[in-house]
Length: 113
Image (cartoon, rainbow, N blue to C red; front, side):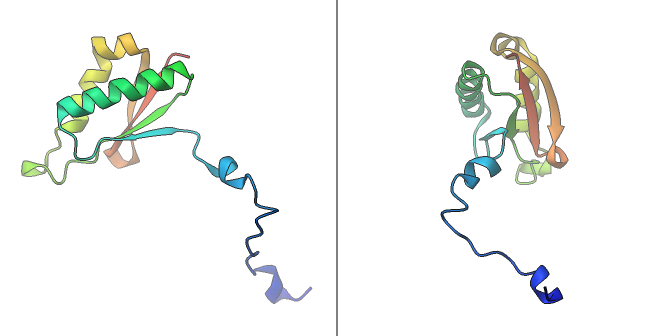
């Protein structure tokens, strides 16, 4: 085998690659809240987390952004969502943990299963 062939990319073969999309799909569910007001984000998060808990999907990645587009460059959405998730509403939804991920632009939310 010539050394040049070792690094060649394999061509896409629909018969061999069938179902590969499901294997490579992220195991974590994402909820993107970019462009939402705090009230819209709370409503959307309530719907998504209720759905995720019903199908026993955890963790959930909540994308809030870092707030660079906000007035003064200080984000409003991430701190508000963190408080909301750690408060009584989050407890009712079965939230067991919240942590910042992706350089602070998202939250990882763990739910009871």
